[in-house]
Length: 214
Image 1 (cartoon, helix red, strand yellow):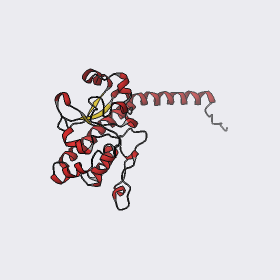
Image 2 (cartoon, one colour; image 1 turned 180 degrees about the vertical axis):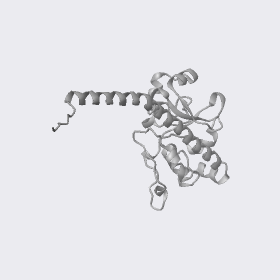
Image 3 (cartoon, helix red, strand yellow; image 1 turned 90 degrees about the vertical axis):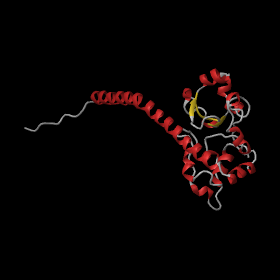
Image 4 (cartoon, helix red, strand yellow; image 1 turned 45 degrees about the vertical axis):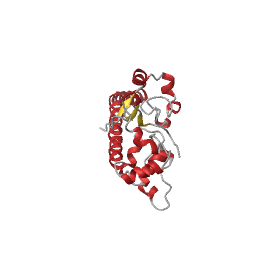
């Protein structure tokens, strides 16, 4: 006697697909926040590597002279000069790009080889002080405390309510600053926080921080 193999009915398939979708949804809710947190933590570590090497590199007299010669360059132009003059090593090119950036991606060392055009806008996610003010700003403390590096406007909302990574002038360790803390500690309003371009170079603690200046 030949037995016919019974396949799945459409209803059974739909139930299985529904269960799989539910499991995927539960997994996403559990895992995605952890992945986001891991990226944030990695970015803090990455920027810490940059600031550490930068601090060491700017301790030499020749590099201090180069800073002065760079004039008011800030933002991407500042970072471009740091790599062009090898104050920062090419291994840090990936560390000036936000891991959660919707637009930016790390440059390769070839952009600084003969004929290379240097950093493009999307090769850098961070602001900076003006080059010729870097050493002065990095020594500011107390009421004059200032942010040295933070996200540019393109990356300001990468982590939403978690805030933005900042490096303060009196602490070389990167940390997150959110809107609530900015209001409590620095008197910035929600409208200020929503418009970073209007804060850079104007409002404390971002009064010595700039985006692109050539």
